[in-house]
Image 1: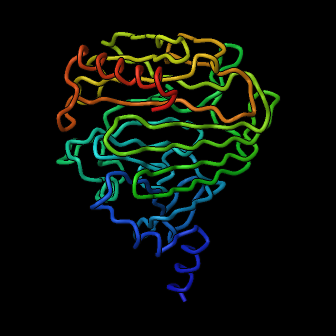
Image 2: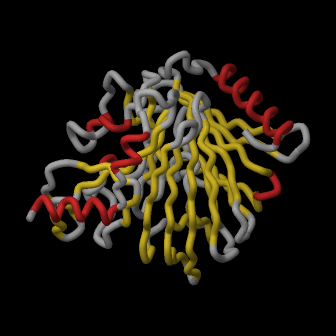
Length: 321
């Protein structure tokens, strides 16, 4: 009976064995996953027990879920390519974090398996290298209104999906009934990573055109702020570089965005923010991290700026990465 219950639970979560078999994680250069426990139980807002984490391709958050609930491995979905990895805190924080990789192999399936937060310690594959704290992380979504950053404290339901294809991996999050101030909307985030480059494309769509939807970069000490517009003035980047990783060592972070989508920029105590113009249309931008210990990694600010300028020139010519 217990085995039947576990199988039924996995089906409801959206696990598809055929998809897992078709995707060759050792061959392909990108990978996304979300991994949850299904055989424990909730006590208040903590998930107790459970023998193992199970990868699923669809996960609806439990109403009890919050930060450090221990029901989802490394606290949300993760995505990576042969250069870098990312994860999203799938709770009220909604921040994107960086996994620095010292290998070109896909590493997410083993992250957090030996101990829930062991990825904070440097290992042979790398580690979690960004301290988001109360900040926005890198390229995640919040709402900035009346000089206050509003998180995802009140959401009716949240569903996460992961898809792995030959040349890209995608994490999609549906937020139903996200309430901030006097507004309640539905919101979609799609995060797509492709091989060989450092960036993730973040596309989003709101059901109502509300003010204050924002993204940004968390502030760290010992960094320099970098800004530049493309020659045609249609694209720009916002970036930081310095000894800002948790190691600590050199880390660059950047956002590439369409100038016409931005209402204003805000410099807060915690973050550098880009505030988008209200719209119900799909909007997209690019986020990236560049860690010096990556294989053949970017090790100086000069190298980082050169990489950013090359990406900006691509956007200037093609309008996309």
